[in-house]
Image 1 (cartoon, rainbow, N blue to C red):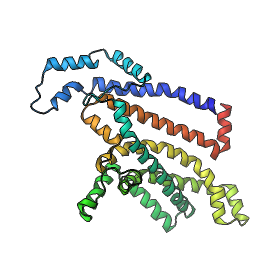
Image 2: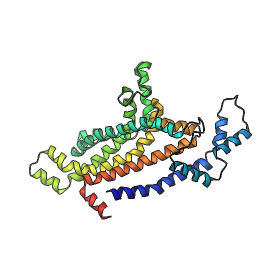
Image 3: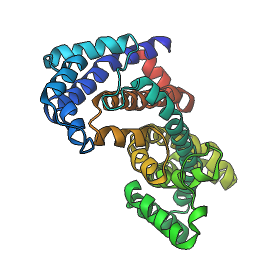
Image 4: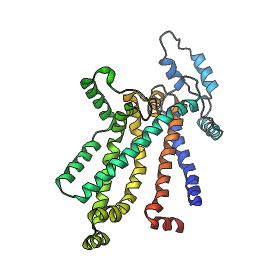
Length: 318
């Protein structure tokens, strides 16, 4: 198992380098000069001084060739240095360290809510295939999937502002156990719940056609025992795969959810960095997002042997 994890980490290195190279190239060639953009967005009393801009560019190392800048950035990363913000001058690591706990807590809770809600409902829909209850659950899942976070968040906020007094509308961050987290958590979980619910339903329908399930029912085994002992475990294997993949959906949705509900997380920091062309912050968040997606896929692979021993034998053979 340790050798397998080590191999996966080794394979991560070129993947992360390619992602960073692509983002760095986009920032270098396509997004415009960040120092000039910062001056253009400055208040009217700040003079546009080309000489001062060139001095700042030279101090920040932005006058060097692309490959030299990228190599220097990677070398600084290996030393644990994410650089400083071009806008505020603060350490990028300090900014990420302050925002990351909010996003991590929200994302983890979204995954837990998705698993707790979607898997049982998907099991019920699959076991009651083509019934009225199945149509209601599946229709709700399709409706949730059709509403992206950047639409659901503002609509829900407008609805609450119309119904509740302004002072009682939850906004901001009060900790993961605060009432304020309920709305962003619900909005962030819409599409993941729809995805996992449909995946669970499809897996249940497929497993129900297996011979061992029909044999258990023919022997008079209670339906609840059949569902929990013979159907649930094989169903969890593809579902867990999807739980790992929805990390991408949650990371993307967090950008809009945190902005709408005023959460001081990585999503809001991403919007601020993109608006201000703060490339060191953008690169750091991209690196963290890539690492989270890869880590979630690794955790899924490690859970496979617990759900299906044949997966462990296959990995051992490789």
